[in-house]
Length: 630
Image 1 (cartoon, rainbow, N blue to C red):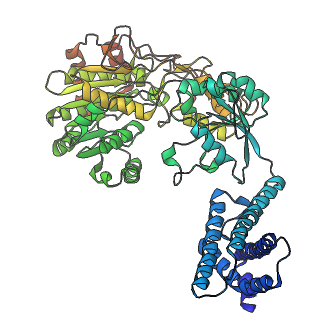
Image 2: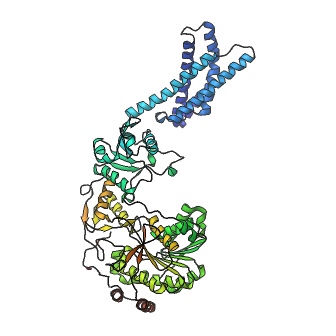
Image 3: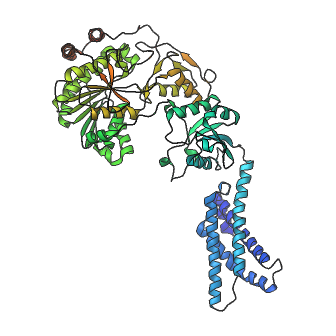
């Protein structure tokens, strides 16, 4: 007894378990008494009562043993579920098996049964009802009197995933939820109920969500068409609901979904364009066992190129960058994401503007394929330093291209941008000149030269979405350059697949672009992000219009007026019919610039003159326009 008190004092967290154990055992004794009473119609003979008294110690030992073996006391009673009930039933069945074994043993020795079989059966039933009923009662009382009332939610998707989601969110937790309705596109389900929750047409989402007094919408359907998802989510956001997503089944913990795994819907999932899927066969054939160089390997696009190349079986990947810390982080990320495959990654600090350095690096590594992603890309920064844009984006591309040719590379891929089309910024003009450099220096040999062009990349370094997220977290305001500005958007994996597909399927000397669907209005993007954060635009978060930055367009383009888009093997990948290029003039300009590098290279004026000479479509914006970092 004293030892028990000392245990209680030193480890109070064990008290509930012993209490539950004693309660379960006490209810078992009550069940035994009820079994005798029912069996003998509430008037048991004296000799049966005496037999029961003699059997009681054995009963307590058997029941205690079964409860200890199956740990019926270990669960948290107020959170009891089907697993706890199953554990109780197994423990009771085990104990009753012991009673039957006692009876068989006594019968074989000619002794009186310790307990009649009919009493054992009734006791098993009564114990099951009492022990499981006790847990249900405690859970019900807890749910009824807990301090926070369940949050009413609606689930989009009344299929198997929706049913699993309902079961997960309605388990007791610190953030209790109650499913009050389902939305679904299947007409055969409309008007039916799932565990009391009605199923409504998803096309009527605006009215249903507005009339149900719901606080959250949970999207349970996997691989849902983004345009369809965006429509339903917008209906929820318009009536002030918080929107959450169910993660893919492979990410559920031990195959089970819990409410804690739900995540808030992301703006990246709501841009309304289906994800572009490519046949990876050609990519796999080119990349497997290949030696690959990725310049700008620590950047957003470069790092994903590195990862996908290693995932697809590259023999070795050399990632080049001038940024030490991001290169180090790339190695850590590769080990986390790829495991043993990360051993085939080599990182090296290298400046693509250093002609001799990049040449010796590629000559030593002997790559089969070069992805050239190194570039300066921030429009306002490059607008004030055109010489830096020229030296990295034009000269760096030329140095890497020439080094690749001398190293015997079979395919060279330039990662370009939609800002290179009819450029209005220094950055766009420098990327257009990089394209001309590839066409002028790379099209006269066996090496295939490929140019890829795409729009803004979601969540890349410096993109608008991370900026808006930071501004919302800081309480605003969101800085918007113009209320009507639009942009194309794509995900990082999509962008990388385009680059790799272009390298694998091109016959050489091609410019590839994506059919990226409709442009996204950035003002709508900002409003959606504010509402996804549970706020209201111009009430909780202000939106400030700050004016277009120098060099920034109102609407981006993917081809110039001199280019026509031609179909390819994939309906979402198009090839630009190239305009004529004065290769000799481009080579002369770039070679003159290369000769000036030992004396600090060209100045801003010389860069602008080169743009004017080779890019008649370049129309720089007024430098006096107020800027902001978007």
